Length: 484
Image (cartoon, rainbow, N blue to C red):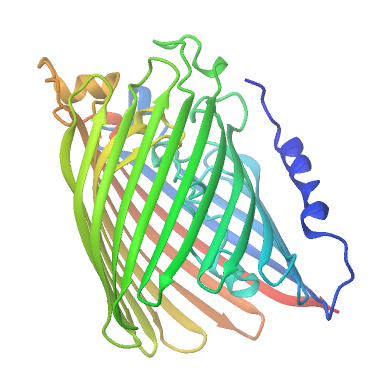
């Protein structure tokens, strides 16, 4: 497989920008340039339950202090909008005793070719050693806006990288082209293409390098004021680095084809109540013998209800069917429940979810495959004053990898023999995470932030039994430099 460098990938993508956005005269265009400079203190500590010895002697602790300049350019007129955000971080790691440079680059562009037809492009490049690095902060969306309205399409929802590799350098680059066309008031059609790449920084093999090509299309149609429907199709081709796997137990690279379908019908009873029905199909076919193919069917019926302008609840569920190649299929269920509550100076989110899903792009072969996942999350934010705010969150998930392979299969089965039904053999892992943070703005241009997070992984293998602590402190000054 041919390796694409981050420079060449961005260069090819950027050639699309003038084609997509055009070069027509601007109308009442406004451009702003905002500059920020700050300091960052990042303290991370990992501890394995059975001690830092043998293969896990590198606990990947980090003690960094650095400076982070930022520039944000936003340009808008009545027909298009452009934004560019770049933020390098120059730091010194006291544990490794070396200097490091991380990068975050975000670009967004949207062009209305007519009052019904729009085309957008976006790109995100990250170089970091923290798999929890956000692609964009909330402040970025507050300034630029989210072209998708916060609704990610099934094809390009980024898969979170495995936390097991925390502390290992990597870079990712994701580029997307999307178009939407409003057929009429109640109908629209859209589609696009996403290309993403994951690479280790240097000669390490902590992550499984891959190139990911995704094509997607979606259609929404309203039959009557009370009935509406939507249909989404997507196809993904994942290509892994074969050379990286030479010398392993299998020289086959787990290249894959992934197919997805989502069909939904909503019955809108009133402005405060609607009842969604959804059917989804997800299938993954692997080229090699590293993992058997799998397939997931899920049906759900739900109820979405607004108690008032500040409180909304959604709940639903239904049967699911999962099948792994060579095994008999298994029936289960999917379920979800969410509660959003807004207060005068606070907001609360509670959510529960249970579903079968397939993980293929975490960067770790041990995380890949069909999983049965239970998860719960709570988040609370409170703005004490206009300048001082707090947030608190906690989450729990139980991930059961069905029909695990390699050492995960040995750990799950021991000396027993697996039966021929999907789900009879599973590798289970419990994950807990909690955190608290605060933000304080002062003296007009300055802002300070402090965050603490605690992460626990509890599995049968020694490599899955660890705790992570992270303390992140930031102090920055931001000012609008130019406006025209």
